[in-house]
Image (cartoon, rainbow, N blue to C red):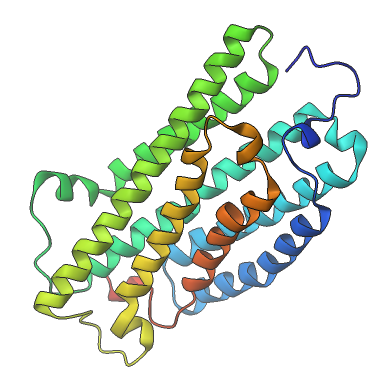
Length: 269
């Protein structure tokens, strides 16, 4: 991409054209950011803090996307385009980790006999999951930069390969979270539900909400994985908004279900 002709518009080349779509999503995330900041204060938990962080990153990313689409000189600015790509990739780390943390936390505050096989034990270790997420983000960012600024076709190809690897890594992690949620549903069906005595919908039926969150994240990442070899289709805003941006937003909204997220006081010390 470093050999792009003068005046090359990176935003349009990557399908960023709708100003209205980006502005609408940025506006929607603003009240959600303040909602989760409030929730983090009223009902302290790392999940709400990380979701608030995700909302803040998405606000910034959609503002950049609107600028890239609306302002010709911004669309031609490679550094601004790379910044947007990095922010968008980093943001998903927070959303996926929040879903993972919620699965683990719901298991901790229950009296359920959790699966004891080596894989289940390993996936419940937060440090391991964070390292895997960090690796996926790092590989993805490196791929975006190499593909965008590579001076040779070989460098660009390496960047694209790294970007693809990152997409598949995220998909595997999304599937792992979904499987953990399904195992928790099975355990609750056999042994009972969330032990904290709350009458809220989230406390009684939250695991099904969590399964829906996991499904939305798998849907989002499956779209990117399915179109990994077709950049034009992946960047088509008629597909990108309903299959990538919208599932994320719906997942964020579901975290607000009352009683879904246990507070730190409810978790075992």
